Length: 216
Image 1 (tube, one colour):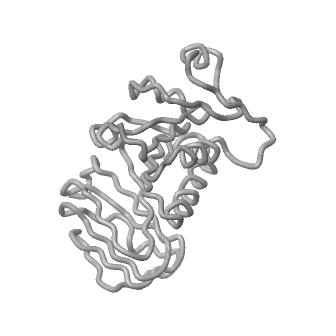
Image 2 (cartoon, rainbow, N blue to C red):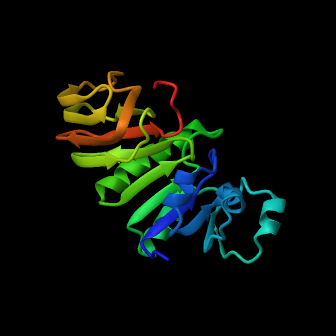
């Protein structure tokens, strides 16, 4: 088992897919509050369960009596997901996979997960956020390659203006492109197979839908 890959179970949407199972196959697991409900779906037992447990019902708690819990007061300065991330990093995480980070009832939490992922990537961590059907990967200055199925949809959402953006291996390629902040130019592209991204300056998130071939 890998000691450097940790999966954080969060409370958002989850669909079990082959890509998700492959990504987490050698991972260790930490659950954040109601994200624990995904453990049974994935067939795993997390080594730690953290949170204020305000969104964990009694039945879920009874299902996992052997998992170590760390309880925090509701009036805290970090989300349960951020606490779980800190615990994973303290245990040696180099790659972090956030399952249930996208979608769900709380759009504020989903947005915070995206910004948190950018900040972690800036610190050198390898980051993936996934709901199973949708994946998100931070794009910072440098190179990134995603193994996407031919015909699947992806978008780049700029968290700032972008400079020197290359997209290679897509239906709508770009070379040394400057993307103004707030522009939709890089929404809804189509992979022709593995896609390469190069960026000179800025911050962005690649949002991919590997099983969505509606644009093919």
